[in-house]
Length: 609
Image (cartoon, rainbow, N blue to C red):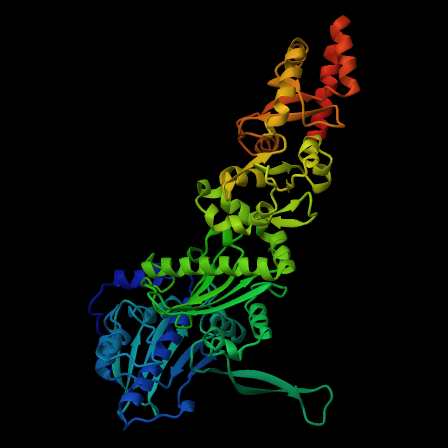
């Protein structure tokens, strides 16, 4: 046999091919996605030609892709019934790295409905060298009786010669590498592994991906003996659920897809199906989960939507499609308008991506608002799992997202005894009420017992209960809602003008006593003063300035905290019998006043903390 002369790759060097094989692709398993996508392109071309040339006709069953794994000979074959390649096309498309036959076909022909060519860069084929020590391509072009074989072991070059092939189409035969200590190449000959790779990346290729799979059944007439047989099986779904009309789908279909994709283990609270045409066209299915994943509020959680291009998985987690505050959203986006990089793994930051992300953000917000207004129980279930994330979103980036998120917030209400929105609170505010009042604490039960809330409740004003550590930080960033400022129940000034004069009178009459108590507490507080807010309790702590006592607690638990302290004010109920005892002691036993001052301060701390 005469050995064929080896040809060198035309456009690139050995170094470039080494770069293709070892650097461009993050995961070796990507090779199968690339070869199946190329096979789909080849079938697309045949389909397109059948639309424009009456002499060419195909039946639907004529189009398929076949995967064959031969463990004994260590070969993996990817065969298609597409347009095939001539000798010249093998030379041009495979002999020149980064030349895309698909892209040329696309440019040479006008677009036809239903025809989407996936390939752009012409490098996907060379990903096969990541797992194969030799690659053989046998191809017979449409309307040709001749077939040719292209063969290469990598950057050293390739050969092309005539071969036998009975049908039109292309076969790619990979001689899989031997296992090494670091790499297990045997897995690419394993049926189960191949199934998973196809399901993961190519499940929605629109042509059947077939494989002869091993089955077993009981032998006829036997109750224990099994016999093995092979069955032709289609491994991919082909028609993505997101490309089907909503009218054809039931809620059960969306829930089953959610489970199949392992987006969650419980039924989602909400499914969102949208098809958008415009500057950026895309299809999407989004889900609002019922429960937060166990690692949702940790650094290990990875947000993002699955990203597809024409049904081919490009990224498992595209973080750029979701803002952090909506990171709980699961689902996918499929678009043909995205600019992909050369490896088709990562996304170039382009205008289309930003447009899609903006639209998804708006869609999620509108669906959550609709749920809040029309499916209250469902929204409250969602909020218990993910409300904290919305609050983080308001606090993050210096409050730049507060306009988007403020209408979605909910807090427990002192009057309604349930979660209420800020809009609902403001709609119930009394005519003489200036502020949106809130109180902070570890639980609703603890806040109920806070002495600071007595005066506010006595006036019949509603109080929002903040029980999450992020609540007050978020509200400080929000500052106001519908022109109503927020006011803490622990603030030194609650804004009750009618009580100011009485406070000032008591402060003036007892100035010497209050100054002495302040000195006795040795800098623990900023001021001691009479309180108009207390009715039954003898004492409470109030805060002065932007930093509250609850915020101080949160900051103190953070690593590298700066030991920031809230400015505390000790408020005394001058109508309480305790105060009369202090006044008597101040007249004759100032050491006892020091003891009383520390007891009251510690009591106030116990109530607060």
